[in-house]
Length: 128
Image 1 (cartoon, rainbow, N blue to C red):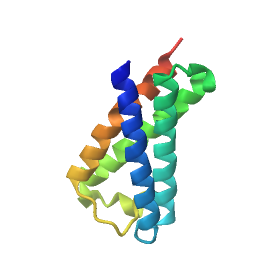
Image 2: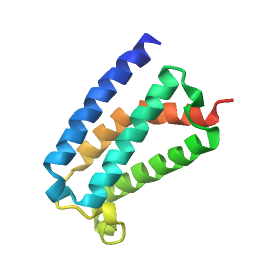
Image 3: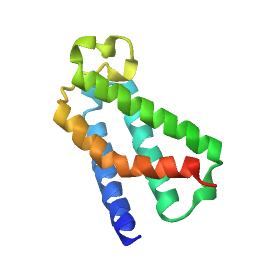
């Protein structure tokens, strides 16, 4: 369990740096992308905290499930947009319409850092 706690505090620092970055580039990022990114990180930090520190009762199981579905959909959309830029999903999905250039490597590293928190969210929505 110590490894999870170390991950949590590392993830909090990573998230704070990411949030600071969002506020620094909000003009290039766009308000929609900034709001989705902030919401995304807050949900993952909240889920990691709830699972790691055994605070499962903070939200009902069905709310965790909705949050899990939201997070997975957003991650899939970002990943598809990154891997297949010719689809031009930014013209259909407002939070992908940014002036920032992110490459596939950045998206995959971000996903890898988010995966343990997503696992926490998965476990919370499956908890008894």
